Image (cartoon, rainbow, N blue to C red; front, side, top):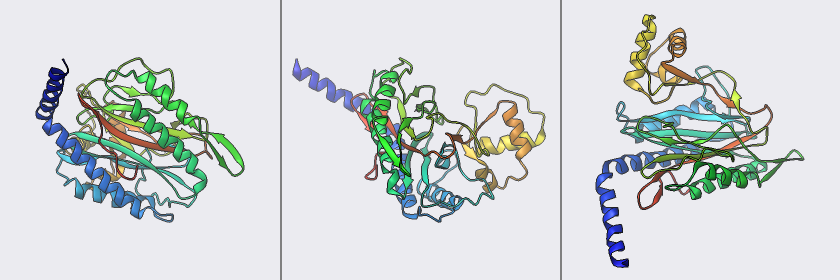
Amino acid sequence: NENSKRISDEEKRNLDRIQHAAFYQDVRLAAEVHRSVRRYGQSIIKPGIKLIDMCEKMEAMNRKLVKENGLKASIAFPTGCSINHCAAHYTPNAGDDTILQKDDVMKVDFGTQVNGRIIDCAFTVAFNPVYDPLLEAVKDATNTGIKMAGIDVMLCDIGEAIQEVMESYEVEINGKTYQVKAIQNLNGHSIGPYQIHAGKSVPIVKGGPQTRMEEGELYAIETFGSTGKGIVRDDMECSHYMKNFEQPYVPIRMQRARQLLQTINKNFDTLAFCKRFLDRLGETRYSMALKNLCDIGIVQAYPPLCDIKGCYTAQYEHTLLLRPTCKEVLSRGDDY
């Protein structure tokens, strides 16, 4: 009976609104902040800007707009500004004076959180139109992943669709034509409260897991394209760190490491942070203590992830919510 179905759908929507009101409010607020911060970022990102200045300006704006309040509202992870062959997890450490060049391809990846509800969203900046097909490929692939996503959809099917779209593009750089490759060991992921990677991975190539997406889940759908090998590995100096989410008790012998962990627990808990964030809190001479926390498994280091030198990589990412009656692309803006 069409009428009773319509009523039950309406009831379902009302129940959904009532049950999840606070969750939706938090995640939408975090998304609104993300849109505003990236609008600001896009206005200051120009060739010649020092990356550390760019990150600090965007982070200051992020803190201001999210009305930073301890773990209740804050930056969710450091501002990534990975350049060219480096695809992810690069942010400048103190003393890194890297300047953005007019021929660079930069991935701007940052997060906001309200009451632990994280928005993870990224875009790519390139000033030279030569790279436009690369950016177009990745944007199209991410939008394909978003279109495919839904309750009961198998993760492997999303990965296969993303790869097919991504790899249908070519880009010509300096007279040489490259097929855009999906970076096979990077992927999207489910997001939990105060947990950026909550256990499910959304592949961007075929052959992924047959696990299904479920109602109520929050996902970061992100894709990466490359003119290189399409595989990343750890390279360069590390800046990103994060406490392990399910960390059993481990005795810490080093007193300085115990102190540092107190700072981490108070300011970030299980959210990602970088060395600049520790500097800003007045922590000094913490290298050995941080290494100790990593060695005993309390903190995990996330070094920059790079393809082969000389290649170019791009990224686009959105956070979406699988509501009972619809799919809400929370971080969508008029920019991408």
